[in-house]
Length: 162
Image (cartoon, rainbow, N blue to C red; front, side, top):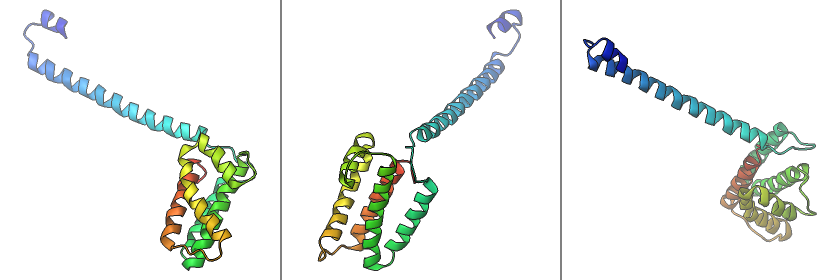
């Protein structure tokens, strides 16, 4: 552009500046769009690479089981209790299919929290489930169960299996 002024001194400088600003803004916007698309692509690729390998379970089956658990939770107090027990069992089966070491769910959950710290939130739901199973007089509110089920769902999503 500077050479145009030297070679052709009669050119209107504002016209050249506005057209060059347009080109600059166009390339800047294009670069930003490309970077956003690349970031989204990298994020999706990373989530695919971080999906744990499941042995004996597939993600569609896990999704179908989760839908059944949600339906069961809406069927009164007994349904809510059963849904909580089933959610705990489902997550334990996922841990087993990932070959996490441990004799009990609690031991496998401890191991899982090292690699997936967000899974730690399931502890309160697991304690609630244990109270239900081991104390026949224990009463649980549907609200408590809903909160626990959200924790189990979040854990399954953190593991990229749901």
